[in-house]
Length: 149
Image (cartoon, rainbow, N blue to C red; front, side, top):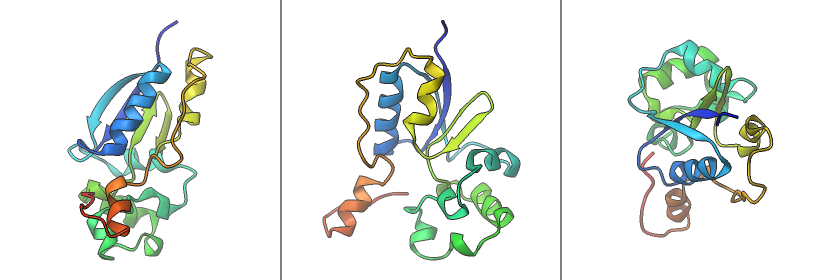
């Protein structure tokens, strides 16, 4: 039985993307890792990753333009949101993960485990929050450091 290969779009150096990749690999997936920021995104390609998500959840809340309120996701149409993301990939919620026709934004291991057809170890444990930038959490608590979107 072949191992499912996931296309994993990350921001290189992202702490949570590193943890997410480790969990997927430990579960039994093979990953093709891509730089989310240098990928030549098209509106229709991006749209597939956000199916079923409310528009504000399409965005990376740690992106500088979001934090500085230059972009207010809840005020945008889908077309405006996608156009902004194509111009500025830091706005895109990560990771983006795809396998075949299945595409998702954000990290939810339960979405992908069924692709393993029971081959995954049942011992995989996912931390409660593996999407919020730990550097951002520290900054909000007044600790040193900062999150680079």
